[in-house]
Amino acid sequence: MGKQAATKVQAGAEGPGATGEVLPEAPTLRLVSSPKRQRILEGMLEAVGDAGYDAASVRTVLDQTGLYRQAFYDEFADKDDCYLEALRYGVAKFAAIARAAGGPESGWRSQLRAGIAAVLDALDADPAAGRALIVEVHAAGPEALKIRAEAMKQVTDFIDSARYASAGTESPPPIAAEGIVAGMHAVVHAKLAAGDGSGFRELLPDFMYFAVLPYFGAEIAGAEMKAARL
Amino acid sequence: MDSLRTLPYSECMDSPPTSSPEKTQGGTQSLPRAYLVRSERERLLEAMLRVAAAKGYEATTIKDVIEVAGVSEQAFEEMFADKEACFLEAYEAVFDVLLAHMTSAFEAAAGQPWPERISAALGALVGLLSIEAGIARLSMVEVTAAGDDARARYRSALARFTPFLEEGREYANQGEELPADTARFAIGGAASMIFDEIRAGRGPELNRILPDLVFAVLMPYLGPEAAEDEMRRVIREHR
Image 1 (cartoon, each protein chain N blue to C red):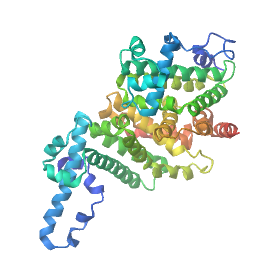
Image 2 (image 1 turned 60 degrees about the horizontal axis):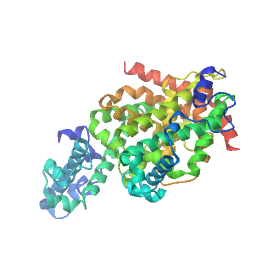
Image 3 (image 1 turned 90 degrees about the horizontal axis):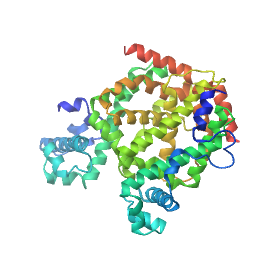
Image 4 (image 1 turned 180 degrees about the vertical axis):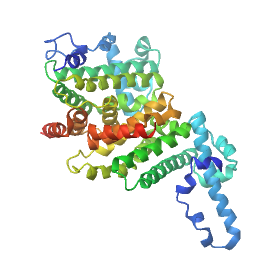
């Protein structure tokens, strides 16, 4: 498999062997310096996921976490400040889940399959967090949208690393990866925004088809789709 | 009205009272009234879009809208329950217009292969969106920050583009094999790319991403090679 693909997927891991035992720590996860801080961030994601960004308040987060007001303001300036960090935290967590699932030694297609499956499983397990990260991010202002764009760029770069995989037979225009990420994002976003909190994993076969198609052609994409249905 | 040339929702909306004015009961006296009602409604819808596009939906007041429309507050209240009702109707009208534009481009290209007809429809879409950049921003970007109702409208509005795409199943010759989500994937992908452009402040030059949109929409149906061929044809055509 291509070197670049391996480097990109492994960006958060210490090296071969580090994965499999513990989740590789994504850089931003180190921002969470205390369990209390982490509790607030997770409470924030739950609150925003349940109530929506506009309706969620510091009060909701306190109710969610059982912490005192002062505990919140010791850590964060206000709701916006807390949400932005919760967003970074949530994105880093999803990225770590995807990387850990992929495994450093496997090829692009199996990393992709495992990574997407793990993220879809995570959405099934915690749709509120998914809603907070993917839907409500739009209500949270330009800085939040910047974090969103960076996250999408990371996924896009990984997908496009298929070009360097030796088996990548097709050479689609540069826009291909962006289109795939936008399409997958749109399907997930629509499902979350509609309040549908389950069945994300069932999207895997279709996503595999769309992501593999531009790099390997219809035949292999169809085979990946069928394999993912099993 | 001049601006109706770029946003001609009057032609696309269901307005039975005036679409056949000669049938109106009550003779000539009722005609000017019916005409006035329709045009006031249109003026309010358009004013709502223009004001909300300029200052944001939240900051928009009914007073702003009736001033720009040149319509009385009483007339507004007769037609709409509140600001939101007026906005939602205006929002629907935007998609009526977009869809009408795309449909006529798609149909004007009848006889061409399906990918070329899709390119024609997408060309009509980005053409209109770039002329009406303020309204495009409102309908494609700001709506995603609004509440659940607005988002639901947005999703069902996007779903209205599905019929153009589903012809691609037959054209691709593997109709049954394609994933069920193909249209949603293609439309969502295109909408997301448009979103990014507008967000980046490039709404008025949306035409420039037409080749990318063509590729992203056709690729799930046709695969990379055929999608790229059509993308290149579009680039040549617009050179």
